[in-house]
Image (cartoon, rainbow, N blue to C red; front, side, top):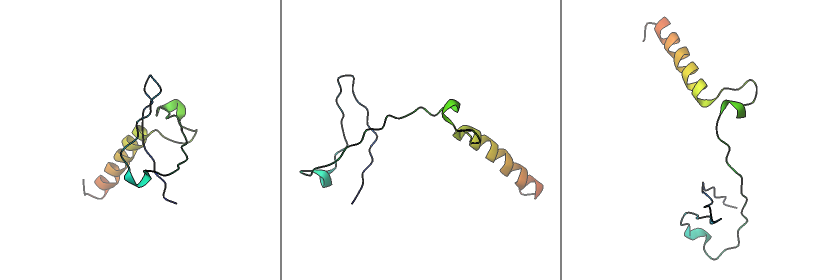
Length: 72
């Protein structure tokens, strides 16, 4: 079974517009709606980093490693 995932917005009138996907025309489908959560530090489990924290810390670590080996 082929699964499709689309990001969509429900309008203030309750209308959902899906992308044009001819493979789904004239077929029965099952639709599950999962509200998106904003990516904030409050939503990150203990012991994990936000994407921004990861990017900053990994860049600093990589820069340190490369400079220690005379590459950067």
